[in-house]
Image (cartoon, rainbow, N blue to C red):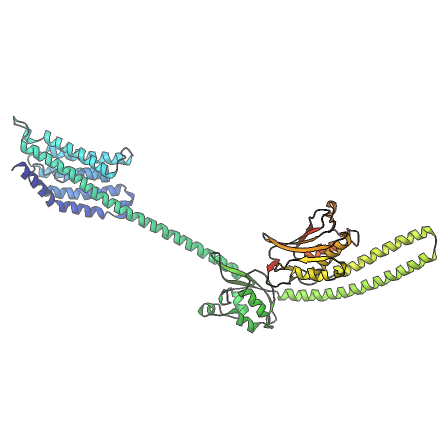
Length: 573
């Protein structure tokens, strides 16, 4: 057979044995996942057994045309087993092949076959260890090329050295054997590279699948963790909401009930399950339960209008209970999707306030009568003092009488001040516009020739009903101490979370030394109670006042209204 025919026969033998390689690939592809992922000793044992099975079949189906049936595809399988599974895999397949040589070699061991098998296992293992220890930094395909080339060359060298054609022949190696060795080495090179590439493709495919599975498992674990966190948070929120005695109802922008706690459902007389089974609107329900249906209009404005968390009205139910509703926005991703209504039962507080109000009324009545009697006695005493002064000319006695008269005036001022101070905090604070109260206070000084100016701010503030008295005292103070004041103005602005009301005039102003003293009780040139009363009235709802003007340029009283104590309205004055 000529060399060309021999080469063709070798390639034909290779394709006849392709079924063995296909079986090897299939078996390798179905190595259990738990072994493939960890790549431990069991995985190496699996690889060794699979490659050994293919190698044994390769021995029983030898390549025709070769005197080395033990080599065949084993020249591909042995080094590849070492490269894929390491020394354990190489050791298993090498041991199996060496054992198979005993019964198949009837005329003695075939030295070339045994040598190639041993060297193949050693080379594959060395490449595996070098890669695992970082000694080889080649890509997989380059590593395969190097391994295939090294082993193909070594196989040809071994076959050449131990070829029977070199023994007893004066001409050296027979041409036929030389061509056969080159062809076998070529097939080993190509087989190693191709089969190694297929196995690498399987590895990369399975690694990609495992990465996806691992990522999926990671996502599922995160979802379970987040779900557990949400359940825990929801449980905590529900326990917190249910633990309060306040009725909490969540509504849409038009008042449809979306949910409630048990106290809220009991207060409205609805079933919590019914809330989610049909559309229920809070306004008709309240209309049936409140004693004064007219109050629903104000409450409706809270739900469908302004979203501020501000109490504006009380709802008294037909069962005698009184609730104080407050409304806050229901937000989802910074978007207002409804309202959260908190109904606080203030029945007991109202009863206590009523009893306190009755007691205060009695005290005020007693105080008024007592104050009236005291002022009458002071007036009578002043009259007698005047008569005594008319009857005597003794200068020492007149001096004492003058001191007594001054003391009577002070007593009269203190007594009259109690009439003003007794009303501070007596009534609940209300929403009112600073402009309207300023206008009312300015009306009492219309004959003073003063120009009053103000701005329509569109804001209301939550203050004591005596707010008008605040502006009255400020105007009175400007006229008394400003020295020819001709202009008084009121302006308003919002700075951050606060609203600032500025009261200014064009008088002389306040000296730096007196700025911190003017609000003290008894300080001043007149009664000493006007500025003190202003401070007390404003402080009831947390409103502060200070004077920060420049002396000689007029007063500048800065009134600061805190967050929650002012709101925007459309009413103009």
